[in-house]
Amino acid sequence: MEPQPQIAVLQSVFSMLLYGAIGFLGPAVMMFHHMDAMQDQLTRGFESTEAFDFIVVGGGASGGVVANRLSEDFRVLLLEAGGDPHPLTQIPALSFLLLNRDGMDWNYRTVSQRKSCFAMPKQQCSWPRGKALGGSTNLAFMTYARGSPYDYDNWANRTGEPKWKYDNLLRYFKRSENYRVPEPWDNFTKEYHSTKGPMEVSLPAYTGLADQFVKAGKEKGFKIIDYNAPFHEGFAPFIYTQKRGRRMGTYQAFLEPIRDRKSLTVRKFAHVNKLLMRDDSDEVYGVEYTRHGQRRIARADKEVVLSAGALNSPKILMLSGIGPKEHLESFGIKVRKSLPVGKNLQDHVSTSLGPFLINKPISFNMDRDINTNTIADFVLDGRGPLTSTGMQATGFVSSSYAKKRGEAHWPDLQWTILGNSVYKNYGKDSEYALNVKEGYLQKYYRNAQGQDSFQIINVLNRPLSRGEVLLKSTDPKDPPLLDPKYFDKSDDVKVLVESQKRTLELVENSTAFKELGATLMPHSLPGCDSFKFKSDSYFECFARSLTLTMYHPAGTCQMGKNSSADSVVDPHLKVIGVKKLRVIDASIMPNIVASDINAACMMIGELGATFIKGDYLT
Image (cartoon, rainbow, N blue to C red; front, side, top):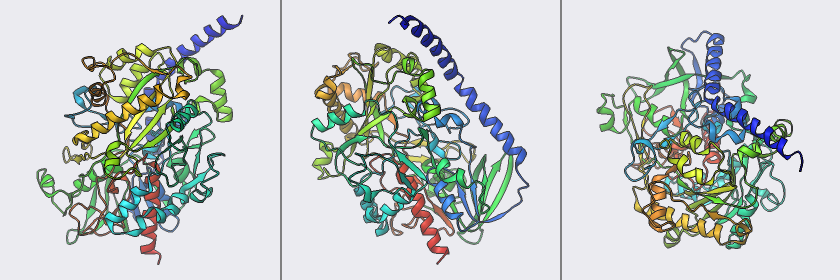
């Protein structure tokens, strides 16, 4: 026991250095961004109006896959608005701290919400989106979940295209996947996984409170499942896109290994302004983009593929004259094709219940658990708490509302345990990452500071509310107007209230968590003090105040039948009524998948590239 005072002093000094480093994250990110841009500008070759077979706009979760697969057989130009991903994104534990950093994030905000986001300035929620090769896979919390088979069977029914059925999509999920999950998690699902794809999928080396969460779910009658195989309800530890403890996004899996491929040209810092269309027809022949202050044009002999994501793909379409007629005309934009672009915006709205206080030192506490040993574990062996984003286990659950609709088999809720304690600067860091009013979370979380704790993220996986993306102006540099219309349908908030009550019961009335003395911190969220603690009204106030995105916008270039007034792209992802143009990203989802969307986006990229090859190689 004698060395304890010295260890405490060393840890205190280390903590000071750590917080100093965290405070320098913003400048460090911008310094890297500027150096990357400068090097790119100095080393770029002469850019004439070149012609390629395909132009892919956006190097994210879908675009990186499309660029990889098409460049196997064609000349491909990949245009990415950002640069290389920052090296710090490789450290999973920093994921939360890297949100909303200029130089790697679009830093989007929603418009003011009427029924949600009460804890945010002007009631505007923060919507981080990745701005670098790899897109939002550089910022996401690395969880890998395909969703329910019923998600995809629903797409097939709505589009009339059987290729979108889950059984037919399985090969495209497997094509991307290098499944490295150890027993017992692999011993009953081998037919659903592959070890031959470029994206490594594995359990993180540090799983924290995952066992307790899964055991609690089992106590309540839920099965232990592989949620990347067909399932109904159930619990399991989270699977990550990770290799040797480090982040593996679509840049590391699909782009970095082929940067020298002669048929692939990658242009970073290339901000696409609009599509180029022939005057005498609805045919796209290229794109206009700005790179290092210079306006450029690139031509596509075969097709342009928009993979800029559910927020920027509709923006580019509308700036090009493809979108809702009245909205485009209000900006004086010539309408080339009137389509419901930007409509049907969906997101997994959530709220984080907690902290739940526990009496054993087994949660991850940054003040205590980041030290020279844990850093060495990560750097040398790819193990330890730095390998985890904090998302440790999850459960897919059907609400009573889903059951009343006869959809008990199709879970509409997802519960995730965030196994991180409240460290010294947690409130302040959370306010920055989540765009919350200054002092709001500092006041709330200080009640749990220094104690081991965790939170349960309650996610509405199948929201009823639909929002929209609109243009702010005709200036390509202006961000789009984002209106998710959270809780526009009243059942959405009712389902989240039920979810919070059930997760509270899961924690406070299960043996697995009782053994830890787990109890909800007995302090009300600021602004909800007037409601009885733990009442329905309190939980509704909690959800409407601390309204959180799960970073999964989707649906704004909806896929459907050519004859449907709601469709933007057809079942082969061609923009309806426009030649030589496809959209291949999360925006094509008719309904958002009932899980994280990273795996679905990669699958969309795989199938989209297959559609294209089928048209040009046969």
